[in-house]
Image 1 (tube, rainbow, N blue to C red):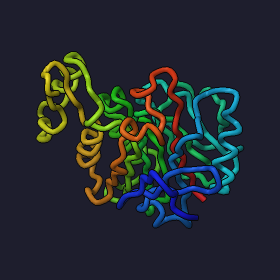
Image 2 (image 1 turned 60 degrees about the vertical axis):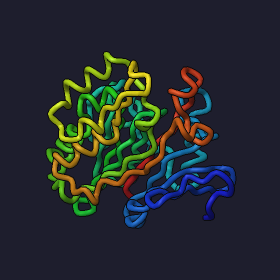
Image 3 (image 1 turned 180 degrees about the horizontal axis):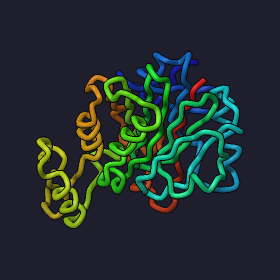
Image 4 (image 1 turned 90 degrees about the vertical axis):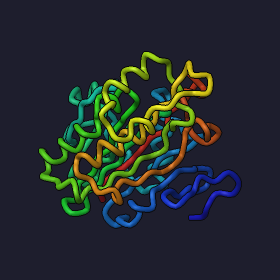
Length: 266
């Protein structure tokens, strides 16, 4: 495996890799556990938006990662706060409709959710050997799906938050997540008692728009749930700023494709 020539998204927390024509990201903290887990976040030209080529796209990335496509679990995401555990049901099981988070302690279950600016949260507990993949868009962040995910991991697998690692994959960042006053007011009312509120919400230069830091909100929530600060790992990559490599709904609207976040126990 080599680094990609040209535009490279690697940083202290993230590796930008390729194999043949396939480009993808992996996260250095999770690579420390590569004997137990496999993980990646896909880049263009792979596109996991529902369509006729979806099966072929999964074959491409699973071949690179040496995973079996028959083990993929992909829920029907609706910006809900529903987090489900994966045991033996199949990908098309109705249990996975209106679900935006998957958790499991079973091997060879590939958790796959899709993203185009929304936050992908990878969870791994190296003590209990449990994983999770969570879709936290601005609605999910507002409704604290990361808190719900931690609660589900505790309930289902007796996870200790202090043992949990959470990696925050590429997403739209505060530099590009510009909103109107109505959305700003929602977030201010919800998080006004947060010490970091002046960092979470900032006015734009014309004062008619606002920038919201949904990544910071998730970090604050996770710390309050008991995760150690050093175990909350940020990829530090904005999807819109890097839309030549990453699918971004804010950049391309309805024409946008989808990135996928994958994680599986070996």
